[in-house]
Image (cartoon, rainbow over all chains, first blue to last red; front, side, top):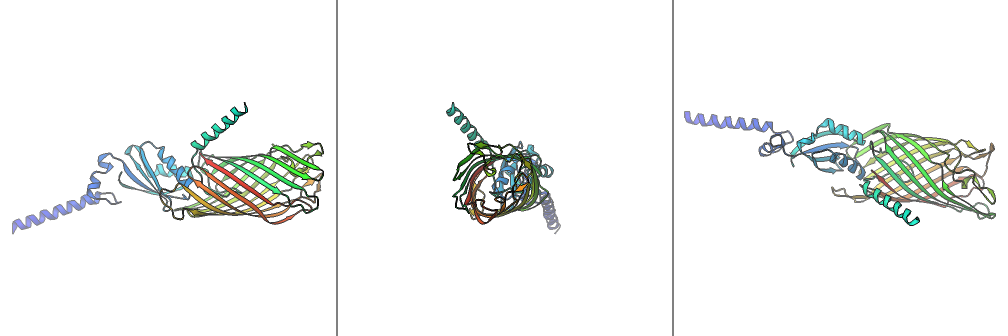
Length: 121
Length: 297
């Protein structure tokens, strides 16, 4: 009976520990595995999803993508025109921050709303 | 020597077309409120053919103009852009007395446009931009031929410094865009001639015809465009006396097509006069055809 209680407590402790680690995973989701290989741990490239308002045309897309590609460390840029979401794949050296992106898109004449980090890319 | 110069021009043009990115859906016959990004350039080359053959008298007069208009714009800040416009025209007026014609640079325009209001949403934008500028007396306004001083409408320029300004509004989505503009040009007197002041009100609707659905790998959009241009011109005064055969009101409807890629725009439209109430025996317009290309870089 005592052994059974010990095993039960051990299982509960592992569960609690696992949940705690899961809570450390970035809020944009992803598995524990993804978290462990994420740029924060591994120094690899990461995906950033930026919501930018006011982009309505091919020109707007090009001028935004061109500005982003000029940032050292940015690997890939793509745009979902309908949703107004620009996706950037960049290494940590690009130092992609909300403040930096707000300044960049303001200069281009658009409105930067928000940014979320995705999986490694 | 001439061949060498043509080759040089073609080389420069080819270089520009390969180095310049981008373009967007915009009105063909007037400006838009969409901004030029900070430290970016826009250039446009436009060819305009005007046929004005409808003579209310029995004289059979005919006026034709072929104009090349070069436009350059630069984004000084995210809100403030400056523009320069330089026309080069060949004008011909056929009258019973003979043919009168001029060729040369017309009056250049420089103006600034400021984004006063901007409201962006996902895939949408609404902007209001006032603009203010001046038309410079760069065109010849006292040209003569063997019949004497060439009539005012055939002269390449006005000879006067003329202020103009207005307001342009744009509401754009990924599927369609509407632009509207009102403007006023206050012409001053030069060499005893004061060309009438001009009021314009313009409306442009652009609708994406192709592709019908947006995808991630679209390289070019084809827009169908319908524009309306209302123009009211005051009478020209010659020696403080109003010329009764000048001024008037015209309303154009202008259907057009525009192909916009990430790198350039090609467009064409025809301005068809649907209403003309012109002064005296002034010639009425048949049409004005436009074709142009634009690049941003």
